[in-house]
Image 1 (tube, one colour):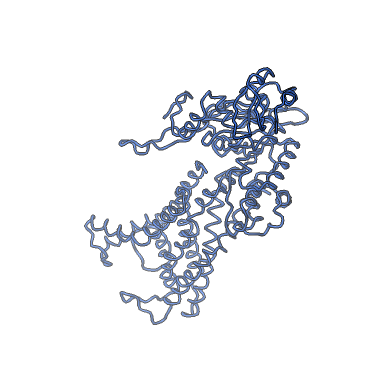
Image 2 (tube, rainbow over the protein chains, first blue to last red):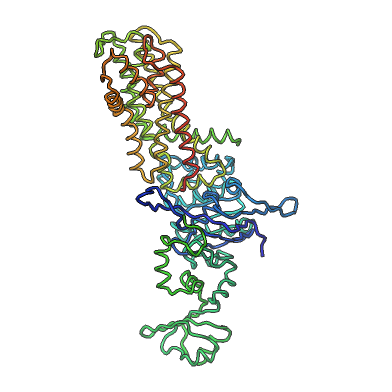
Length: 347
Length: 276
């Protein structure tokens, strides 16, 4: 496993929300946020931070980028000097911001300011050179738009500009909040390739998303966040195994579907099945070796067979033990519920 | 790039953006009318002001023309800065900026400096044009010290209004509230302060608006210290002969510092705690 570059230990940051009383109209209480998270970021790996709306993904990224202060907990950064690994505790947010590049979600760059001026302003805050600015503008494919006013950029171009600002200062860690929003498929693929290149160079990348499927093939590790708590973190395969979501296959075919006895005989388990007119589909769980061959030899007309990638809802249901309907309601209400179970004083 | 170099670069880019904005383009004719226009009018050799007064020295003309700065210049400062924070906060650009290693205090100072300079530069150019107009109409140049005091005082009042409006902008989550707050402050100190002065005078048993009544003059002078426009006029009056409103130079100096430091401190604190 790649070495740990950043370690978050017992980190908490909860938002204050207004809770006025007649006698105390200015009263504020602790609301949702992040509670006591331990998270390791590994050098040269891409971590997918997934969770439903209101899970705390953006708050966690803002904590990591030094925008929101840590109310509790510590951050440790490991760097290499003369071949030795040195671990330092980062005590100020400025120290954190020096090693991190942050790409917030859907930045709407606007105004008459040119792309170059917008980049120059951000670069001045990071002490980056003119040469670096021009190189990054070229890297994200905005070279032909360098003098264009920000108002004339499309959403995809704005995303690229935000990425360029995140790459200023050659950060050790890159935080990307829903980076694929607004990108066309071609740009998304180029973007994913760029992320791979950066991770090969040793940059640790965190991508937040509420869609697991969009991240498969890009990320090496996954972290599941729910109600400000980290439910599980690890390599995708091990997380799938731990949540009992591995070894699942989607199977479709026509005419007669395989009987449950046949499936059982092949050592598989039916998770769900569905028949619509002449077409049937099944989700099976178990060791797939030889199953497809046996099904065909039994005269089953199989049209497709592919491994099943778990989605966020399945992961949430599996890790929380809740049903889909409960998770759905939980998502809507979680931001407003007091977080008693976190053992944090509420006021 | 050094820290100071970065700070200057950010200031320069803010000045460039704001000074050549459509908003400034719209404000410039109004400023032209208010600053050199008033200087032209007040330097007319035949002018007689209400009360029979006639401006006799170039500094007196500059003093009366400062009315244009109080109305037009400060309004320009409000319009240039009402979305200084709120717009970037709403668009997400502020989050990009706050994620950079430059301390928030320096980012704030660069924003204040950039926005204030974007207003001060055109206003100062128009004040210079006014001085040339006064020379043309009256045949006399104002004293160098008069010009220096006028420009410094003008720079200060424009900076104060920039600061008030940026504080409002940092509080407001959307543009409407930010502009309402900024214009509200401008309206209060520009139009309603006279009402506040009258009410305090009435409550204190002083005859309102009696120019020969020393207690009215002293009260008005003292209350003016609590208004940025009042302090501005106190500074300008320091260059006029025979003005005695019962306020010492050091009091004016302290209040000028307070009107600068206090809003700057509030804004810096606000920006330090700001959640994008």
